Image (cartoon, rainbow, N blue to C red; front, side, top):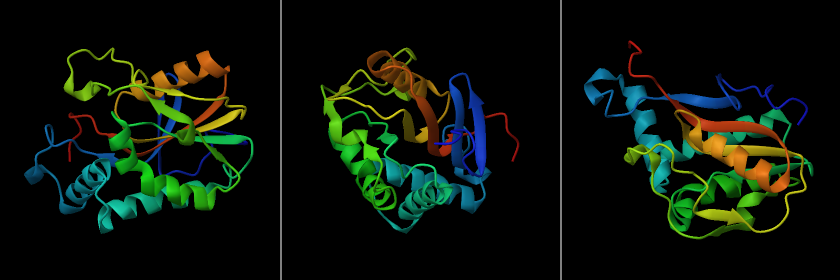
Length: 198
């Protein structure tokens, strides 16, 4: 990666750990009811939830294809110096449902990169932060990576970013276990603040 913050993404948001690149705004239903959103934004929300559930239909597949196309067109990640990590969901089963299509498509466009997901060993199921009052739940507590990560550059992909806690946990885990790396963070969507006016 020449410059991990120079990816040509439609949107970027700055967090303490670095920039997160994302394609779409996500309007959560508990803050933005259906009647408050135009149809295109409702369709994106539904497609995101279908993706999270592992439902492959036209809309959710379009989200995945758009993400893969942006990654491929950047030209930065098809290298032996790059390892790719799709952040695991709360269980091995949900991770396979959610990411099998995405990882398969990424492997086609990034044949020289290595995929850390092939090294992940699950040790249990993670409590979901957004359903808990305790926001200090570590997003990496339910898995470990079996084997070395010699690559200096890590492309970290998640579905939705809100506060950035998951990415922060991933950076801490990888840096503590493998030494400091250079990261590029990408998501399909970023949660919109409830005080945004439509």
